[in-house]
Length: 250
Length: 250
Image (tube, rainbow over all chains, first blue to last red; front, side, top):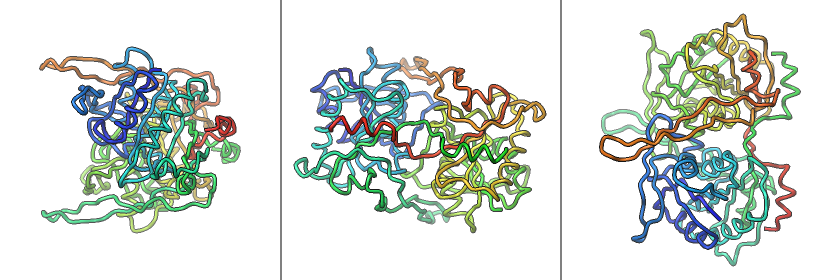
């Protein structure tokens, strides 16, 4: 199995190391990841600057390719410029922080997997729902299980899997739930400050994603101690609203 | 009517000036837009850097606020930090270049309108399908018509309108089609080069979006000389695939 791995926390993050190490059991792993943290870049690509790619070592050994771009850039580069064979699977993660609800729109992690799906390759995004004291063991093990299963299973064209895990020991995870995307998002605002030169600037900040009432949501599964697996796709058309919009007689 | 305007070509672009000037007929217009071009930023937000906002003049008069962020940042800033009243409408554009098919995932223009919709405000993205010799007159006039109509009409929560126009004179436009997102995208690859210091770098480049066979698509409407209006939404869940995924017994 040829596997392409990326993330948005950068090639030196702990989560991508755990993921790549675990997936090596299944085949050839190629890591192409941003040279620095690229969180909240959405599905950005780099068209106005050239992209640089350099080899990156970890623990004194070659680990992968560090690129001066976004996760979507990395997946494009991996498939179209770096790998000799087309990958069988793209895995993006393991992200430090959940990618749940509408927050997946801002997610570089999900964007990496989305790019894989757009290029016709089965793709998975995987995230750990914590920012402190992460334990990547359960997520890495689940990534291996899911990736191994993908050999004999088929995702619809354009559909990928968005996986989130609670940050609890593997033995305490209650199971796996197939979920839908929660209709909640980060509640954010701006912290307005004045710099030493008297000029105003703003920091975006916010609260954690709130609870929601949808028992089938990604958010509720993770909060209840389950692994959440959400199939997502990128035809954004609101087909249900088309008949009403036709009546607007534009 | 309180209207917030943004774009991704930057506050000094021609398209946003045409849009803001036209929409002033309908009420108070506040422009908050990136201080430089931010194309293909996807739904990025800026969390690792502070955001700066400065007044920007055009033709010697105050035009709006130039922000050091993405279109989504600009909409958040407009609503949460700059405007005294909550806007009734967010309009993003007029973009130089179509936002059609899967390419809308990379679009800063669509992302600005998406952020408005996520914050519960009726929102429109509007783009002109050309990169050369743009004539923004028809798009500006259609934006006024659509915005005026929004006073008495209601979009479903979380749904926004993605509008694209062909670059032809207003009199030659054949009409308006309500469309779905085409399942095609830009065909891109990397141009590999060597810099004067012997180092490799890559430029992302690509072909225009191909034709597609879907007669109801945004792409085909614009290519046939119609204004395309696509309702889009951001619950990405692939509900149809959930029953099969349940059978994977993860």
